[in-house]
Image (cartoon, rainbow, N blue to C red; front, side, top):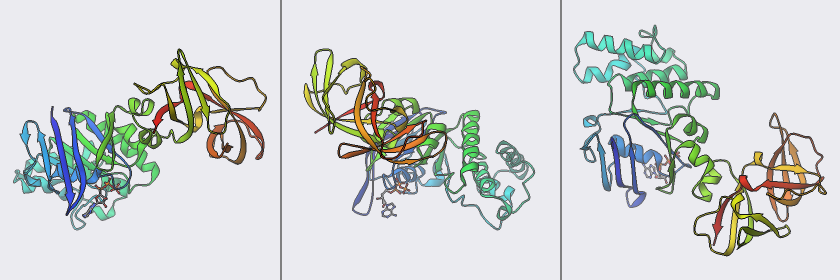
Length: 358
Ligand SMILES: Nc1ncnc2c1ncn2[C@@H]1O[C@H](COP(=O)(O)OP(=O)(O)OP(=O)(O)O)[C@@H](O)[C@H]1O
């Protein structure tokens, strides 16, 4: 494997932050480290760049153990959230800085800088001061500065989070296209689930200094391995239920609802599920339908009585807060319904992600 992260541990003083992180990255692959604030993504990136020491484990790049190499001896380039450009230098001087340090001939620097600026769409900006650029343009300069040295590994530390939404959406497609075109191996740190989905070949979901799941965006979205990942990827509505397996069926008794049976195959159940116990059923707001309380129930869906507590309009569809037993759900539904109305909440079995509760 091109990049091997092997049981990496890291700490700040006596406080452990990374706890045995192992993962491999293929040449040309873009991996996103995704997780809530404080889970250790930036620390892992700092370990890869050499700005923070590993307290255990190894990092190998292209077969070379770089665990204890200083940053400048690693074949990596880092793009920061804050751009970290020199304000007293022009765009070209910023982009060429690394090549000057490497003592490249002047003519070669000029040619490489021009090529990098063209690649990031900043042809014609070479002589501008970076203080005269927008945030999106500054981040393109930072990207040009990273790619101009042709690094074996590109490290991106929340590179888009200082940009406003519209520019961010545009620049993330540009970075992805450039990385793919140049065949760069890249590790991106982000806390934005959509950004990780759009940019990454594989996503590494981190939690509390450990890896919770690694997979393609499709994999993680459709088959989250844990309730935490389901929650993080938008399946954040949850119903708790007693269950009992019975031949081809599963009997469910959800909190606040009547007992129901569903074909066992209709749900994606965890492997080695005990014959009975409790499950958390996670699902996305858009998967639910609302009908009149007396509508005929669907045999392949869980059906629960609820009351509309609140209605809002995020655009395109209505969003309802529904009281269900002593719990609450958020549901998207295209039709306006009055607050206070009794409804039947229908959850198609295929939309339910089931996780055992202890
Ligand atoms: N310089 C430091 N000294 C002490 N503790 C630190 C330091 N930097 C980070 N930490 C702690 O280490 C843990 C992991 O931090 P890290 O910055 O890697 O998380 P993160 O997932 O990148 O979070 P964020 O998205 O907020 O940047 C956090 O609990 C944080 O408080």
